[in-house]
Every structure is written in structure tokens, then in C-alpha cells.
Length: 165
Figure 1 (tube, one colour):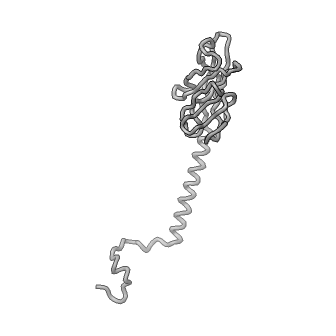
Figure 2 (cartoon, rainbow, N blue to C red; figure 1 turned 90 degrees about the vertical axis):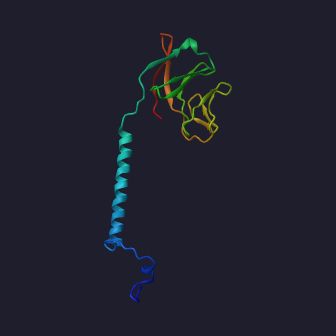
Figure 3 (cartoon, one colour; figure 1 turned 90 degrees about the horizontal axis):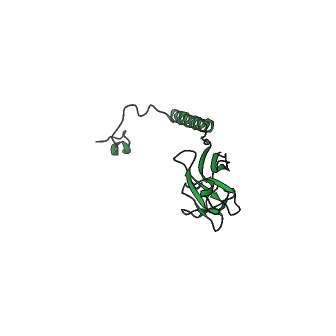
């Protein structure tokens, strides 16, 4: 039974916990501010760590024999590691271009379209210019990652390193 001094809500919710009245609003706000500061400090630390760690730009290595790649064709390879798909194209003017094959929108694989000298991402209709990798159309906001290549005297096309974007 409830008496006149017991609030009505206490009769409806008779459960209590030990020390429930010990945390004031001011203490709770202090804990909230401290937790927010800890999260902010951790975020800054993670951002600093990711920006300071070295990025694997790749070491020079041969891709394919220059005689195996004709004008307007593409050759798929892996660079800078065996987990990174890349594409080498010989443009209609004979120039060589190599890019990461991952779309900068959501990481789908881009393909070479020799009719338009463009790289196409079929996932969301992204289009990249094959001369420099910049975005022509679609949702991607950043250009494709470019890989420096050269034709050497040994008859091979070499990947020299991923260029900074």
C-alpha cells in the first residue's frame, strides 16, 4: 500500500537501485565532456597516424612487352602490390597511360572503352578521361590513381610508381 508521502510514480515503479541519487546532473555533464574530449583526442591521433605512415607507391617493375600492346588496347596488371588491380592503355595517339583500376567512388572496377578513350565504371556510370584520369561524368569526385609508366630499351613497359593524388 502507498501512503500520502510516497509519490504516485514510486507506487507504479517500486524498483530502486543502490546509489541512484549519487550522480548529479553536473557530474554527468562533466563525464560527458571528458568522454567527448577523449573521443576527439583519439580521432586526432588516428588522423595523425594515418597521415604520417608511409604510403606504398610501389617499386619499378616490368608490366608487359611493348610489342604485346597495340594502339587502343588495354592490359590488366597488379600494382603496387598483388592485391591492387591496375590497367595500362595505349591511347590512339600512341601514348601509354596506367591507372588504378578501382573507381574512386565506391571501389568498383573500371574498364577501358577504346571508342571514346575513356575509362568506364559500370556500377554507377562513372566516366574518367584516359589521358589524365580526371572525372568526366558520374558520381566520382576524385580522379583515378595514376601510375607512372615508361617504355624501356629492353622492349618492356615498366611501372615506375604510383603518383601522389
